[in-house]
Length: 90
Image (cartoon, rainbow, N blue to C red; front, side):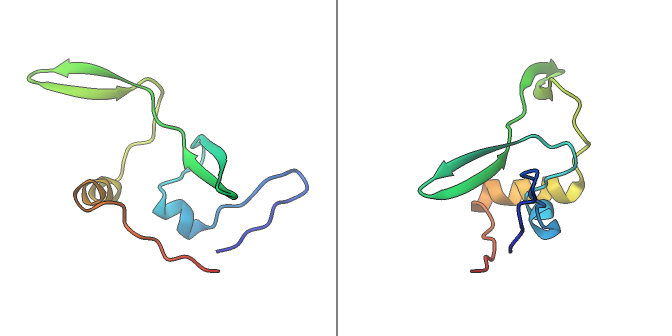
């Protein structure tokens, strides 16, 4: 997929990419140049571990949107099978 950088340096991330990467409005991202390519990824959440009954739960230190069931299912699938391969153009 393609996008264009505007005069202010902004890039519109195509909807299909935002959905596949679970990027939502307000998601903080980081950029890096790796092997001549620009990579973008969400900034990892800062969490604290809290005991809740017999469980230890990771609690984000900042407000986060509630995860949708589809996002949870995708995360579980990726942990079991490795990252889902994305089709690329070009």
